[in-house]
Length: 600
Image (cartoon, rainbow, N blue to C red):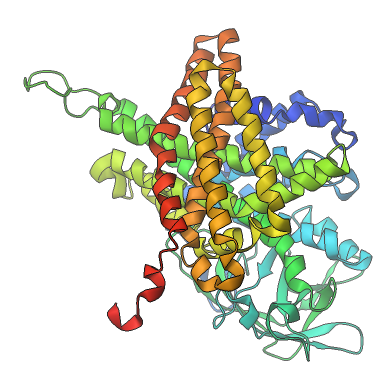
């Protein structure tokens, strides 16, 4: 099935050839499935995304939600698209049959999600948050809470949110002040304000289930005193019917540069003193519960960034193939016919960079999904534990690398369009605006960098980093079997050695002088991310090198050669960025710390 949302040949390559999705059907949980059912579901997702989501992407950007003081108004196409999405079962594809799910692998669920994100990031956000919300309730909720909310969340009757940030706290969750006061009936009354709550109010579903971070009376200071509560917009009766409106009020809408079709809200809890909520999980353990949703959301942000970059890449590729402009270098005859943009070397430079960023990012995000499957259904406890450890290490990269470099792909797409690129008549400017939100969504680069360098690479005495190193070594051995990939294998080995040397240098300083050790953590995040993406490109190249001799069509030959050449380009042009970054990091340069406020 053809689409301008994603190169379906690439998606199939990642899912079936690189990540071997069919192998998951040998596991009991997925035994009812086959490659045929996977392909049929991908086809269905592509059809709905193309017909229902992509068709109003521009309209929802130009007609963002409005609030008249009583209700939120959204263009009708959004509700129609979400209805089709839910009726087709895409809101619960990985859940148990008894919950209305399809028991598909998480890898397939992320592949479906990627298609919808590429078609319309704003509309998809409503169901994306709902899926993550349901996963938290399913894992930490009581049986009563699961019965009350899960069937409705997983059918799309209710939508869900997560409510973390407060006006005075920003990303510093230790500073939240929303309170939860116990009541005699076992419920809690919430009081406080939350901001930047995506999907916080609308009439796209019958109800909205908020997951809210708040503090109990006498709770410890900081993040150790945060609890998690489930708080519906409308109370839910035992039979599933809706009761009265809860004391949750929309204070106003926030108008952002991108994702304009998503309601970004300011919510007030307990203005009338009767905002009723239930505790989820253990008291003062709310952040650990919420991190399940946050980590899913971080992977989702990364995948969303990939797909917005991918849309821009495909649009600029089509434009470059169609648009005649200028003549070949060296031509001095104005009577010579113009050539297509793609004939110019600088255009091809920008196109191959985009291809490297978006296809590398897609491979990275889907690999993370495959790790979730391994964690859930791996054939041994050791395999499941290793998958969990790798996923924990890579989550900051999955979130942040595409948010930086697939945004750069959008910038290059605009550049290829020239002056038309920043006009509203072409879609690439919207993709850039939408994607610019992702470096901030679910934790900035700085937050992810501190998590990566300050915790992930040194946790369990560096066990995750060592495990990742073994994955790198395996790919290097496989690549060395192909003459054309041996140089890339050697370069990857050198880059990984730089990563480990930098960690050896900075790791001991974390306890002695944490501020200095983490001052340039964002540089480490970028260097580590580039090394990981070089690895996923080499994995793709190995698969392509094996498949090329047996390619059965000219299209397949071109596809595999494109993979091999793009991998080579990434190793020649992108991976070398990391060497001077590591040298600077290991010098423990403190220029940032020495800079004083008055000097700016």
